[in-house]
Length: 544
Image (cartoon, rainbow, N blue to C red; front, side, top):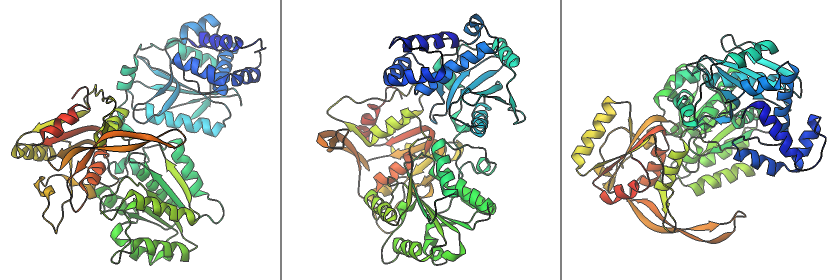
């Protein structure tokens, strides 16, 4: 639908709720707000995902502005068709208000209300980061009728200028529009251009070739300018929500502001971290936590990443040492990240991690949560969810897997599987993620080939292509789980088949979850000498 028709549609549909003079924008916004849910739902079904009254009003104002600039309704109708409304890049959810793709150039338009010039500029810079990877150049515009700010961003020079109406109209008229369906638009974007890990994309991180989402930026702003006497901050989030990028971004900003910063990593250091050390970052493995805390006065900020791996026993009194440091060093600030789902040993559990978080909260910690998941796409998320447990008492929602980003391999002979894994690890861009074995005990897990990286080596990392082997150490067994309503009340039980694993020094199921959540683009499950497991996994996919 073109801009003019859509504007008329909004006005007409709103007017249908009552005879209201819609001549003024505020009147229109108020009229929409009275029936907001119904109006939003109606246009969403038409593929116009306006979020509320102010967005409707801003769009109508934008169309009125084009008329004021000399565009006749017939011209607007002719030259503003085929824009994507509220398009989101798959996997990362980056959204654009209005975007149209062309054979000669693309056009990106942001419509803002209740904003500032600085916010407009910042958003256009962010849009340029995401769209600059496209083959065709993009013209970037931002309109805010509220503050009468109409600006254009030059992607070549990074400069901002006021929009010249005649030039903007010419850009609309001269674009050679590409008529693309949604799947074709999605194919324009290569997700690996945007998912930056400080460990696996260290050069991009150091060159600041990344952007944070709004949630992350809010956390940064708060931590850099905290309320008086606030000195303990916790950041929790599931795999793929960008904890490590956020943590290292904050550390970099603090270092650039002259603060003494040390990062404690909840595992052995990886290659990317050693590279960051050479660039001035103080990064220490978790084995050096206690010695670092005994020297707390040497730092303005102590950052602990993957704190769910902290231990508390006679040999490693890490938790008690941390709490003592928090109590006795009022001049030092602490930033602690945590993911209760990523525990790797028997001494680590979600319950312990949750208890640790409660302890921090009781000490007055400011808690932040990361919710948006970037690393894997919805199809991958669904597959992993079903792989861990799939329903028995209702049909399985199978993963479509249209692009075959999830692959299944089966080997009836271990020797052949081992050869395959070695060759893929040594001569391709795939990464085999394996399981840590006990150094002390003989266990069933010893059957697995020693190939690739083990779970403890990949904490906080992510890879484009991941291979995970599974053999007789994995099996499905029936079980139940509480069923709760929206109020959190238990209303019954649901039956599932749960993925289980044989006993081992390091729990195999925990290592498996750690490994499988490292993938960004493609995943291979290599099943070895376990036909029953292979068939059950096959039933989770429509195509493989």
